[in-house]
Structures are given as C-alpha cells and as structure tokens.
Length: 416
Image 1 (spheres, rainbow, N blue to C red):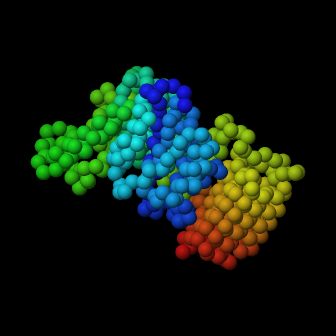
Image 2 (spheres, helix red, strand yellow; image 1 turned 30 degrees about the vertical axis):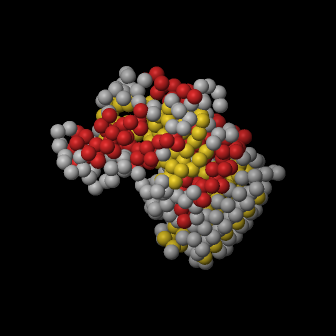
Image 3 (cartoon, helix red, strand yellow; image 1 turned 45 degrees about the horizontal axis):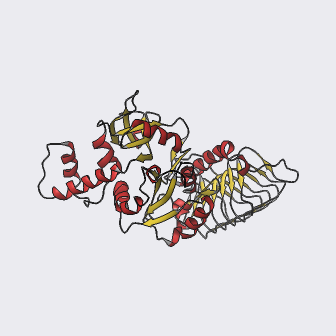
C-alpha cells in the first residue's frame, strides 16, 4: 500500500444474517450476500468498488452468518483483488452502528483516517473515490450517499433534507409517515474514526439512563423510547444520523446514477440487469458477444460463465446472466433472466423474466415466464434448487420451492 498510515482507508460491509425470509427460496441454498447478480455474488459489486479507493488497507464483512459460509469466497476475493478481506461474525445483533463499534479495535488496527461503511444489499455504481474526495473537503465526521427518488416511494427509505449549497445534512428521519423530502439515504457512508466516540456516547447514555430518564432533550426522548433495546444495540439511522443532523457533522453526496435496494428476489433480477448495463461501461470484455454463427446470438447485455455451454442456435438477451456449468440447448430463447449453476435448458425452451435455480432442468418446448413486475410477489417466476420442468410445460408468474417436478402447466401459484 502506498501513502502513510494516516491516509489509510478501511471498508466495512454489513452483510446481515440468515433469519430473513424475504429472499426465499433463493436463500435456502446459500447466504443472500453470495447470490449472483450479473455473474458475480451480490457482495462482489461493493467489494470491487472499494478496491478503487486510494490507500485501501482492509475490507471487513460483518454479519451473523457462520464463518464457514463465507470462507471460500473471502479467500478467493482476497487473492483476486490483492486486498485483505476478512469476515467478522457477530455473536448477536448489535444494529448497524453497534455492529461497527463491536469490532472497533480490529477496524482501527491500521489507524485509518476514514472508514467506508456499506450495506451489502445496495445496488449502485458506488462512486466511492469522488465521494471520499468530497468528504474530505466537507471536513465533517460523516458523509452519506444520497439520491432523489419519486415522492411516492421516498417514505420507504430514510428521507433527508440537505443544505443545497454546503450539502450539510440538516434533517433526517427514517421511513416517515408524512412526506419530508425526495432525497433519500442510499446506505453508503464515509466516516472519520470519531464515529466510534459518538456510538460509545449513545451506549453510555443508555446505560446511565436505564432507570432514571429525563425527557428534556431529543436524545433523552429517543432513549426513553428505546429502553427495550440492549444498550449496545445502536442503529445508525435513528441513533446517529437523526440526532446529529443540523450540527455541522454530517454531509451528503448525491449520486445521479442508478440505485436500488435488494430486498426481495424480484429486485435481484432488476439489479442484475443494472449491473450488466454498468459492465458495458466499466468492463465490456466481461460481456458475451455472438451473431448466431459460431456462437449464440447475443442481444444487449449478457454474461455467460466460461464453463457454460450455449448452443449456437440459441438467442440470449437482453439482460441475461448464465452461471457455471449451465447447458443451454438448440433454439432456446432467454430474456431478462438469471440462470444459476448446473442448470439444463433443453431444446426450444423459453425463459423470460425468471430466475432458474441451481441444478434445475427445463424440458423441450417448455416456457418459464412472468410479467416482469420486480416488486410484485409473483411478478417474476422463481424455480428453486433442483426443480424439474417436464417437456411442453408452461410455468407463469409462479414460485417453485426446491426439488419439485412440474409435469403440468401452472400459473400464479406457489408450489410447496
């Protein structure tokens, strides 16, 4: 690493835990952060974005998953990027800020001047170098990545008000009941190490006021509301951002690029498409090409793993990702879909607006399709691991759990 120790930057990515069920059936096979988007694990995209930060010393992944679930990936990505990546397992939930504080000593080992904090389920272009430069110019404790969204969807996220000139964060509220602003928090932050002092203050204040509370200040009111929380459970939004807004400590950096939050499986398909489109500008050599002669016809942005076999008469794209050892037969048509490892798609099958799970098989002349509504429960079709779709079967707007065999057509169903 170049530069002095005072210039070093450490990145921390919060990866959550295994209890969430919104990503099922896909998370039954592997942790959600390792689910592939555009041919790479979900967490790979923020990790590789961190690599672009000057003087990056270390990347930490913090979560509640078993260490063994991340061991192979962490080893592989560390070797690939030539940057140490380490998984740190929490013993219990500590909240987004509490989880950071829980590993304070490790994070501060390299004496970083800045700490990048990311949520793994954010999909964006991660403009970290420019954001870091702006953060240093602001001179505050922290900088939030923000984006403008529609007024109708803003209350699903943390809404904020920033000074249009200085970019100082003036007001922050998490998922308000009434409209505050069309600017929202993207879940990407840069902090100075002073953030640990602020988190520690929250913890100590909770401990001190566990029995006697005065509601004379906003912080005291918050403490009174949060007595059900353990003192060390500290939320970044409610416990840090909201109280510090308007105190010349927090600033904003607006992205004009794409941004999404990956909560449900449908959104993973949209975000895979966004990352494929982004590859067109950042790493076009990773995208497939072909005109139907020696290789399959490729339309738009498509990723095909080097070990996958695609018949030259197939037509693939736009927005298709094909994973390792998949087999795509003659005359197959794939549009806006994710094909996972070891899938077999037989002759003349069609897959549209769908995710096909590991080791699944789609028969000849069958169709797996959906309307393509990323937010609807059955807006895309999902085949879990090792699902078999027999020949000449149509599967529409459905979710199929692992190890099922479909011998008749289904529509708008969840197959258990």
